[in-house]
Amino acid sequence: DINENNIIQKNLINNINIFPNPSNGIINITLSDNSNIKKYNIYNVAGVLVKSGNIDNNQVDLTSLNKGIYMIKLDNTSSTEFHKLVLK
Image (cartoon, one colour):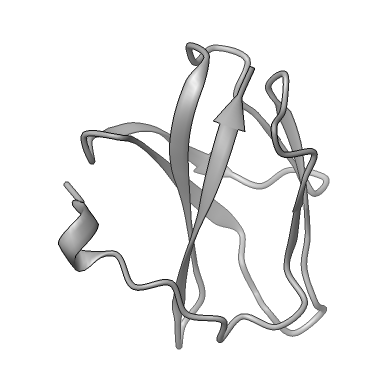
């Protein structure tokens, strides 16, 4: 679980873009070639993991989630990044 006190957004993963945001459920993630990110975790505002999986073709399908605010966690071997997502 995560909470507001232990989320520190670091911009160590270069050239990452997550769009559209807000989204209807399909988000695109573009990464730099050397970022080596293949997996994601999605947390709700309570810090509960609600979805995880692999990033396929630079897209993540979140259509199974309810409308609301979420955090997406992206990891590589040297850093972690959290980004806020809004599903409408």
